[in-house]
Length: 485
Image 1: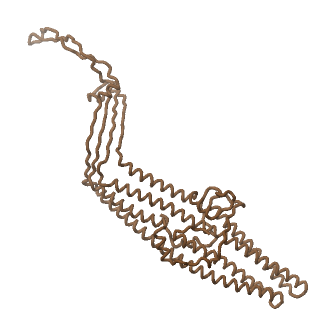
Image 2: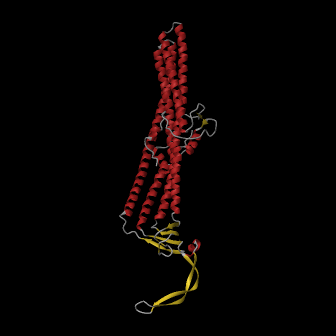
Image 3: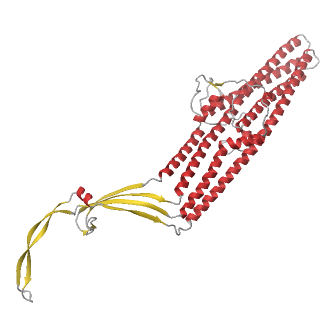
């Protein structure tokens, strides 16, 4: 089972480190522009981890069907055909023969269990619960993939806005540099003012390049998540994102947990495995009971040494008697006796004539088996306890993760509000500094410091904005809501 841990939020934060995955296919719309919904729905089907989880579900489905089929009768057939030389036992007459012969045996048997201590019934129920748990595993894996896609998608949006902010700052510095050069040519400012702004412009150009590289890396991460080849035509749809203050926190951590514990597939999966473990204990205990089965069989034999009596004929048989005790005188006479007439006994005739049938009941009573049944029950009980612990651990991890997510959302909201005020103040300050620089009240170094403070505030505001949006989407995820913009 995939467990939700407290480190999930850190891995899903607005960082530029993408999580590699694998999806195979191209943009469903065919225009090269991926919407978030297209990417999510696409990955739910084509992600390799989802496919692997689906294979596990199919295995559990086969196990469940097989446990149902195990109630059907068992039918087996056997056959043998031998070429014999030397001494052997004829399978038809059971006499010892010392000649070359061909022999054959054929049999078929069937058996059906009548009572197994309810072991098979509990195995069927256990396998059904395992199948349902594996179905929840598939949904849980799809949820994990969705969160990864949202993270990469937001990374691209953040990088795009960072590029725009960096370009605006670069353009503002270039304009200020042009005005300062005019003032320098007129002798109003010193050359160092021009050099300082040229240095700042180079820094701004580098910031644009860094932001562009950051965007390209984010795009590459998303393409790798979708398992498509890197290409320049790949792009995402830019949604209209309202300011985060329009996303109020209307729930608290306990409310989110109460909803998540009822809806998350990961929790449903561990609960189903608790029930499955209980059925495993019941199935193991079934080995304490006697077993009753009904069986039947049929067999036939063939031997090339067997002959078929087709009739009888009268034959004179000579009999010799001695007339004296010394045995020197004897007298013969003839008796008329019927003698059998033999013909070839064909394979099919022997197979038909030598048919034997049997049927009856089999009772197996466990008395002593080296404590195998007892130890099997003990292992099943331990597995049940482990399943209960896994369920408790999953709920505890979920509670801690949601508590952390809620606290992070509150902190992100505070940071966004503070960053917004910081940008407003820094923007007024940089405009004022620009006027004072043009008037010669401050030098270029002082202006650059103020401009850098403004750019830093803008960058922090962007990061705070997307961080807050993401934290809210995480809370939506735990409430079972669709993650969309």
